[in-house]
Structure formats: C-alpha cells, structure tokens
Image (cartoon, rainbow, N blue to C red):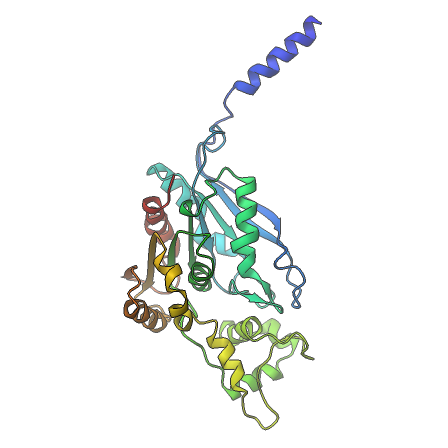
Length: 335
C-alpha cells in the first residue's frame, strides 16, 4: 500500500512539472490524410506530407495557443527540396526571438506533373480543398492553434503565390491576411494550336524527362482543362481539333482560373482581408503578370502593400520569409 501510494504521489508530481524546455523552433514532417485529393485520375497520393514548425517554448507552455502561418511552396521541386531552400524553421526561430511566436505549416503541393497549383481538378486532385479544409482542420485538431480566421495567415511563393490569392478569394472565411511572393499565373496563359499539338504528341517518357518550361503548360492544362474520359494518359483536354485548330473552350477554362480575370467577382473577399501584401524581385521573369494584377487591384480599389526588391525569382526567398513575411503576420494576426 505504501509503495503504491508513493508511486501515485510521484506520478502526480511529475504531471504537474513543466515539460522539458523546447529551446529552439522544432520542425517535424507529418503525414495527413486528404479526402479532397483522394480518387484523382493522375494517381497523386492522398496521404500528404506537411512540415510543421512550432516555436521555442511550445512544449513547456501547454495552455498557450498560437496563430498559424500557412506557407504554399512553388512548382517543380518536391516538398523536402522546397524546405531545404526556404528553411522555414529558421524563420520561426527568428520571429520568436523578436517576440512574434507563431506556428508555421508548409503542405505538400507536389504532383506527378510537379504541382497541383492549389486548384481543384478531377485529373490532379482538389489541392484547393486539401489546404483550405483538410489541412486547416487537421492543424486545428492536432496543434495548439487559435482556431479563428483572424489568427490564420496565408503566404506562398510562385505557384504558392498563385495559390495564396486563389484561396484568399475563394475561402475568405478561413484566412484573414495574405502575403504573395513572386506569384505566377496571375494573368491568363493562352494555349495555341502548336503547343497543344506538342502536348498531344508527348509520351510518358517525354513527360518524365521534360524540363521546367516544357512541363509547366502540361501541368496547368491537366489542372485547369481536365478530361476525365480522355483516352490519353494525361487526362487533359488540349482542345486540338482534327483540322489543326483549337477549341476556344480550352482557353476559356484556363482564363477562368486566372486571378486577373476572377478579381472583380471576389472584391468582397479581398476587401474583407485584414492585410494584403505582395512582392517581387526586380529581375523576376514574372514581373509583367504582377504588374497587370496590381493595375486591376488599383482599378477596383483593393488595398494592398507592394514591394519591388532587388532580386530574381528565387535568390532571396528564404531571407524574405524571415525578414518580411513573418514580421508582416506578426503585425496582423490576432493572438
């Protein structure tokens, strides 16, 4: 009896002791199930990797809750390679040292064609709902978040910058502040008959060895112009007719996924944002699309902050996540 009582007392004491200190930001690669991606024709895995970074002190403060910054990576490289470049754990550490404690989450936006563009497609899968619904629900259920719109921020680079504005427009109930970095795909990218013919002629071996510029239009076509009943392995509708002309419906579908085209329909969502920022390097190949998008934001009176900095498409992203992106959310997310 005395021995049992002693064990019980010791257990009670241990239960009341603070957890061992988490002195630095901790990054973990988790795997979550996404019902939204399940069943896609391309065969992209519905079990998705997600990097989760918790700030110093997370373990020993079990009653404390934190705002969350969701970060969407770009096209081409898989999740692990994106993290090697972005080093988001270093950004969370620097933010905490500045008094800005946040959880940061980066989900896997990769696909067999190297990117799902955070869009919804029967061919590629519903990456949009994966982030806006499945991921947010999992994060709020498994981490000590502040599960409110006002405490959720969304940012992304390149394809992820596109995903950021797309999700902000279509899911205004989920994210309160957004930060677009070097966003791609803002203006329509029309397909011509010659490119459609090249895509039609591609084999699986051609796809496997395709370079960035060759594969990107294939990926966006499969995402934005799917063909679930198509005979080809791509399950994408090129719109190429037997006479060599192009069905205009294909370009209508592509344009229907362009934030430049969508913007007037989503003014209430954009105007409801607590804060909206976008940036791009002065040597970035996406400058023109960003300029056109800002012109439309100005024309419709949407408030946003913009910075043109010295740099190209990717040479300063890790630095700017640390020095610009997380400080931005530190100012605007509720705690």
